Image 1 (cartoon, helix red, strand yellow):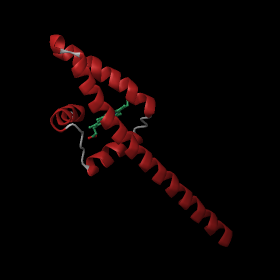
Image 2 (image 1 turned 90 degrees about the vertical axis):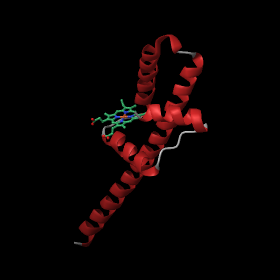
Image 3 (image 1 turned 180 degrees about the horizontal axis):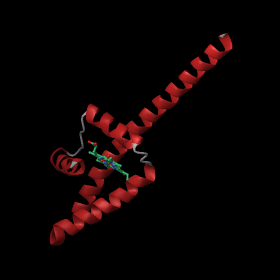
Length: 107
Ligand code: HEM
């Protein structure tokens, strides 16, 4: 699971690194599925509660912070990619509409 990998990276390197093509892919999957900003908060809550239940006694504020930060970094990176893709799509649609309008005017 991506967030799990991120939590490990965060612990080992102090930052989360996801390669560009994975990020582009994740951005496009979530955009296509209609995921929006507030969904990320709900999923975060669910993830934290699930990990808390899973680790039981070992759960601590520190662990919560690490999972939280790993998730936030990943979520921010995915959302940034979604925004880029969305902007490109809007731009593309606008260009297509302009081209179609130009064809109509000239025909
Ligand atoms: C850091 C946050 C998240 C990560 C790392 C993540 C990761 C992933 C991954 C790895 C996939 C599988 C992509 C594939 O190979 O098809 C996926 C799919 C998906 N995710 Fe997320 N996700 C995140 C947040 C969210 C949120 C907030 C939602 C909205 C509730 C969401 C909804 C979905 C949906 C609907 C799919 C497609 C499932 C399917 O078609 O089988 N994800 N996500």
